Figure 1 (cartoon, rainbow, N blue to C red):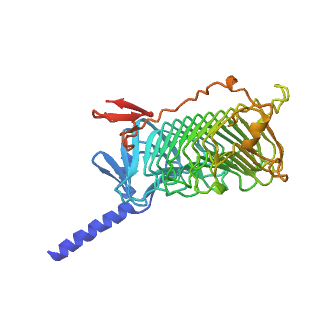
Figure 2 (figure 1 turned 180 degrees about the horizontal axis):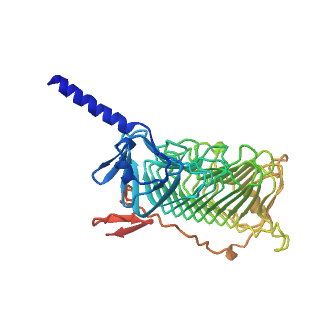
Figure 3 (figure 1 turned 45 degrees about the vertical axis):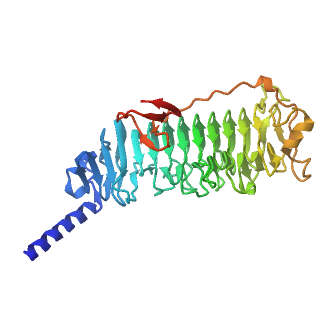
Length: 457
């Protein structure tokens, strides 16, 4: 009897080892789903009630295809992942959730390595797991939620192939351990991020912004909310960096609401930057003003970064705008014809920016002349004498460049900027905890926060 029992235990251990072993499909033009994989004992994918469990590394080979299951829950065990080298269709027609298997599981999620097709992803919730785009053709990600990512890569959505283009729309990234979106410092991926909510990411509290991008040929960030966590004093809002000196880079940040971060927007290195019609409020949670806390920070010791900044509301930062190095920085140039290529109406509004009892709307820590005409400054009177008090430049340190700020703007002529607020698709209890990340489950009666508003159900 003891020998039989021992043999049976060994058999079970052997089965579990087989499930957890690496599995790779044959590449014979087969289309796989989690359901189909669960029917193959050697795949390591099992079915447990109403969910599928990925127990190890499962690879869909080149020549095969993978299609996401609809209205399913897929759980990943410790160190488990699905690697797709063939074609992937990750568009769910009904909400589908990918999550971890047990609270102690540290898993990877999905890594798409298809080099021949743009991978389309939609209607998925990634909870504690992430999505890696490692294929040359990049990804289009729409209507997805990324929640509580475990930090197994530098972004819940990881840009994993140099030069691959990405488009991310109508997505939510919330309370991820590291950045919402990020990649390697030497991967130059063009990316558009539109109508997205980024809320309290980089929970590890490292020097990593919520949106952490290496400059690709073109980066567009538009109509997004970037909400910080004031307790995370190392985490900025949006950071775009060009550490390796790539050329021809264009960056646009437009119509975004960026608040409660260590800093609002920072750009590092050579690039052509346009920052237009954004609201940057309370980006001040830096314990040492010498290390940050700007609404906008432009840094480039090579002097090749250019910037056009117009129509922004910058309030309650330790520094409104700081310029360190850089080439031509244009915050407003009204002395030229409106048809001139360097014309800029200004229309930036500065309110209560400063630290250590001193107001700083603009700090020109460069040797270049900066035009900043047509703006509304944090001054009782919009004249040269009063505005001079909130600008640091040549008049304060002869080694620095001058800021040309007159004529100032007319406060009566600047209307309220209307911004498109993306729907989050996430429902919170009043204490801030997430109840639902999609519309698949009815809510019980009670008070909830939906898209920032209290709702009675």
